[in-house]
Each structure stands twice: as structure tokens, then as C-alpha cells.
Image (cartoon, rainbow, N blue to C red):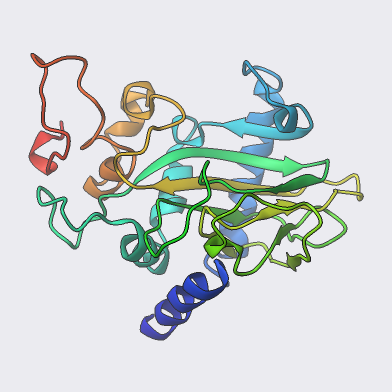
Length: 262
């Protein structure tokens, strides 16, 4: 794992992205794909405030609330955990030991793109420097290529400090079911149009520093039956050690340790 980890870190530093090959077996990918399609069919068009891109893609939001299998998929790759700890762990978060992650997940959704996604950044603002605030990753459930809507990137653009330019020379990321594509949230990226008429499902998560605002209130929305099955690391990643208290009478410590967990 050390060689793979070193290669991944260097590629993310220099190019802004990396593909972790063969992280999941065909059997696991098939089970997650079937589950995702079933949930999508039963919940289709049942979420509010669709953005332009969400109106033109098949999606299932908040996967962590749907089935424990999605959370276990995120936490099963040790090399992914080490990459995220290297880039996102806060060294001044002293309430948790260094062997624990202290980053959290901002959002977690399944997507099967249809339209072309324009180049954009996930960091919300462009900036230069070595400190990374967010790292999205995509667990590939169905092979991705130029015809069915693969991810495209502008290598090195994560260090540009400027917004994405649509006329940039891009590189397609061809990936297979079982791979994990991970990138610096500042990199210019998008997707090609899905011209095949077939699905192209992937599980897309956005990992961020512990202090970044989550897209939804994950700790309070997670079903208790799922919470009971989580490991300590999984509880931390979902934000249970760093979510904001409602007021000073509930608490005031922002960076909490595992003793605060239920």
C-alpha cells in the first residue's frame, strides 16, 4: 500500500487528481448498482430545489441515510483513508489521535450523468497554496468513457488560483467499475455528454475539513438503525464529533473526541 499511497499523493499534488484502481470487486459493484437503481426508481423526483445540473441527471441524494452498505463502501478502502488523512486532517485537532480521521463528509450522492457538465471547481472559491480544503471522490459502479459521460479535468489547474475556463484543453478520465477517482476540489473538471442512452452510475462523495459546512444536517438526519452499526471512524467522518451545538447550554467545544459519541 505504501507505494500506491505515495504515487497517489504525488499525483494529486502535481496533477490534482488520481485514479485508485480495482478498489472494489465486480460482485460488490453489482450489489451497489442494483441497490442504487432500486432506490432511484422508488424515490425518483422526490427531492426539492433541483439545480440546473440536477434537473438533467439521474441522482439519489444522501446515500448515508439510505443503506449502511454505502457508508461501508466509503470506509473500506484503507488507501483512500490515508490519502484523505494526508490532505485533510487538521494537525491541531488534538481531541482525536492522529490515527483517526478528523475530516468529514460534506455530501454523498449517486449520479448517472446525462448532459455535459461544464468545467467548474468544487472548492467554491479558487485559491493557491498547498493546503487542501476539500477532496471529492467517485466510486465507479459502471465503466466510464468518452461516450457515456466520463469525468474530464484540466491537469494542474488546482494550483491556478482562478475560476475554470471553458475553452481549456482537458483530459478525459477513463475508469472501470471498482475504481475510485479522487481529486483536489480546486481542479477544473466536468463531464462529457452521455450519448449512449444507458446509465453511468457512480457514488460521489465530497470530503472536507472538519469545519466546512455540510450540505445537509447529516448527524441529525441519519436513521438511528444505521448509526448503531457505524464504527467510531465512520461516526467521525459523518460529523458526529464536530457538528455545531444549538446553543451554549448544549455545549461549546467545536473539536470533540470519541468520548462525545453516543
